Amino acid sequence: MATFRFKVNGRDRRIETDPARPLLDVLREDLGLTGTKYGCGEGQCRTCTVLMDGKPAASCITPVREAEGRAIVTIEGLAQGGGLHRVQQAFLEEGAMQCGYCVPGMIVRAVALLESNPHPSRAEIVQWMDGNLCRCCGYPRILAAIERAAGAQPEGARS
Image 1 (cartoon, rainbow, N blue to C red):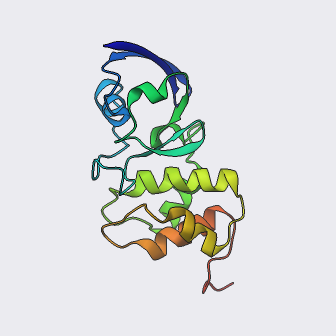
Image 2: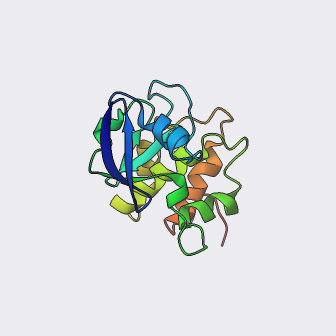
C-alpha cells in the first residue's frame, strides 16, 4: 500500500492503495466517479479515457502511481457552472449516442483534440478519434458532433 495525491476534476484527492491498481478502479470504486466506463480492460477500446494533465489516457491500464501529482479530468469534470461542455452539448444535439457506453471516452478524447487543435479538419478528427471504439457504430453522428463542437459545418449539412 502507498499514498497518492492528485487532483481529480479540480479537487485535491489522497488515496491509499496498491500502486499497480488501475486508475479506473480508483476513480469508480474509491471516488464514486462512475461516468468513466470499463470496456476491454486492455486499453484497446478507449472507453475508459480520462485526461491526465490534458492528455488522453486509458485509465484501465494506467496504474494509479502514474497519477501522482497530476491533474485528472473525467467526464464528470467537464461540465462547469451548471452547463455542459460544448462537446457534451454537441453530442446531445447530434444524437451521437445509441447505447451511450462509449460516449464518455469519446467526449473526453474529443475535448483533448479541440484543446490542442480548435479547428480540426474531418480527416484530423477521424485520425485523432481512431482507436475509440463504438460497438453501435455511431461514428457518423460522433464525427458530426465533434465538427459541431469545433464550429465547423459538417460535410453534407445544409445551410
